[in-house]
Image 1 (spheres, rainbow, N blue to C red):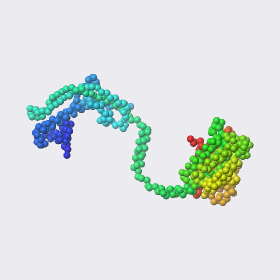
Image 2 (image 1 turned 45 degrees about the horizontal axis):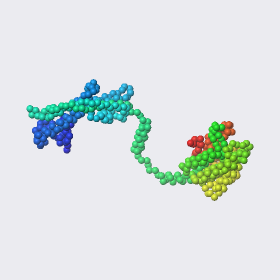
Image 3 (image 1 turned 90 degrees about the vertical axis):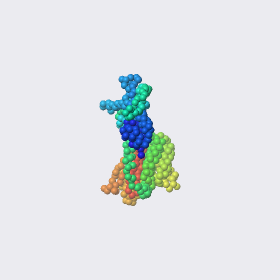
Image 4 (image 1 turned 90 degrees about the horizontal axis):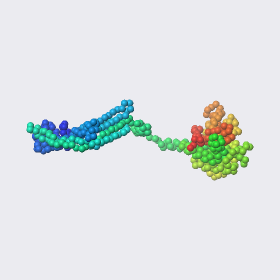
Length: 487
Ligand SMILES: [Fe+2]
């Protein structure tokens, strides 16, 4: 076992356990060399040698750090030398929170800032270093050496043997501190770290029965139908923002917006899953219907960006791309819904589409000449017409007249019309029972207002929409694609 350090003024000179043991015995015996030597079982001369060495080392340590007397060659600080103990100033500027922190004294090296702050109890958690100034100057130290001897009374006696001057260097350190600035980013990171620590301390959540949930989700997906409503696309229509003050529109923009909306809405529906797609085609898919670029029954020439032949070809290409895209997700039913702008042209297009997908089981193009179309999905009955000439008040009875069996069996019935270029829910009620009500929705359009519509203040929020229908629980929500908000 190591000897306990003796309570001696020479403790700094005892560097080993044995030296501390010798020093302790020497002190315990009242510094009696003979008694201490007997206790330790060593010769007196040996003990004297050890004690002298301990004293010498203690004095060296003392002279180096504590008892060195030095004075400034340059009369620094009024001629006073650095003191034996670190002279530390710690000043608090009133009202500012700034702190000036300084040290003047003899050292063989500049005191590290961290050490300087630590010995004075300054924490950098609340303060931060603003400025540091280090200065150095030469000094002359007076060194004294001593020797241990025995006095005439036989007692130990320490006498000075040598004194000389030695060049040294003093260092001055000044540190300016101020209140630590709050870094919002660091504070946020710290808050996140604390939150993460708390979360890690929470008990684990109950085990998730993923297999059961996944199975139920897949089963429900097959019961859902996604309706993609891109009405009133008006391919070929020309609108220029410098004239209308709003948006550009032409055949290229129409083609791009149509496919962009379809991709967006399909991906939205795919998150929940569906087993069928309904994609009405027509509904003013084309802007004009004649070689003179008129509407079907109109007699004034409309503004278009392409010739009527090109308008038809571009429209067919877009429709084919649209159907090809949709059939990658689920089987498609595409009913033709003639518009007031494109009754002939859209009929011709659906004939093209019908032929293209004649042998494709995933696409059914219904180009029957009846302007009214319906699609039943479970308990949902959906009717389609353009909405220009059909009185909305007659549509509920029209549905029951045209499809009486489906009308009776389905609990959720809606008409979806276009023409108005804006979303509008007419909310027609067949009778007083909520579960037998019928809705007529006017669906929005992606296209921009042309000069005539703009001059007459006809504008719309440009959108396409997708609806989800569940075979048993009916209407399951819808999603808009807002063209004006797409980057
Ligand atoms: Fe239209």
